[in-house]
Structure formats: C-alpha cells, structure tokens
Length: 66
Image: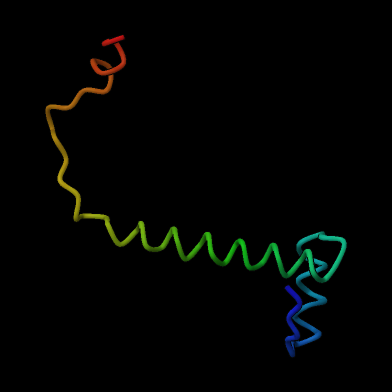
C-alpha cells in the first residue's frame, strides 16, 4: 500500500543511520514494528500486581507429570 507522508528528513536520516537498514522504507518499517512491540509490552506491565498467584504451584512437579 503506497502512503505519502511528510516526515522530518533529519529524523528519517537518523533512523536509517541508527538502524543500519539499507533504505528509508526498511528503517520506517522497523521503527513501526518496534513502536508496536513497545506499546504491546507496556500493556502487559499494567497487569503487574493484578494477577493472583497460586503459592502452592510447583513448576518442577508439573514438568515431571509426563
């Protein structure tokens, strides 16, 4: 899908240099993937302190049930 965007040329040049990607398109694609991953990770952090843990759970016992 072709999309025209007015992006800051200095930011694009810096993204290409920092990422090591061979093209502007590759650098922007990588930046978007990393942005999405960070936002998804942030939503997981919000769960801290909200989950109930079963103190009696022993992963070693679960592994030996084979």
